[in-house]
Image (cartoon, rainbow, N blue to C red; front, side):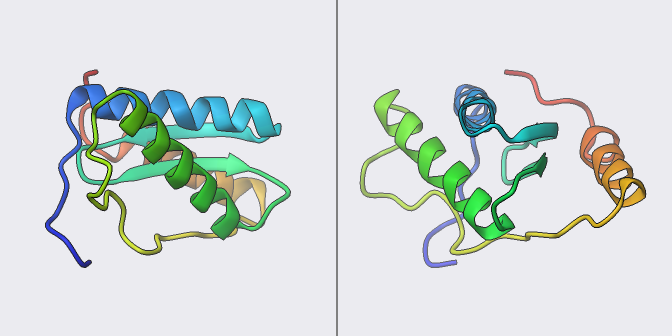
Length: 111
C-alpha cells in the first residue's frame, strides 16, 4: 500500500454498495452477496469476465461515484493496487462464499 489506510465512512460505504449494484445490473452480472466494510469490500458475483476485470470495474466506478458525490478527494488513492479474487467452481463454493460475506463479517454496516 502506498498511502495511509482509508476508512470508509457510512456515506462512502453506501455509495460504494449502490455503485456495485448498478455495475452488476448494467453489465448483467449476478450479485449474490455484498458487504461494504469500513476498510474492505466483499462481493460474490457471477460474471462471464475474469475476476480481475470485475474487481477493476467495481473499483473504478466506485471511485468515480465517490468523487462525483464529493466524498473522495480527486488525488488521493482509495484502493489497494489489486485485491483478492477467487474463482468459485461449484455451487457449494458459491454458497460458502455467500455465507462468509453475509454472516461472518460482524454486524451489518449501518449506512
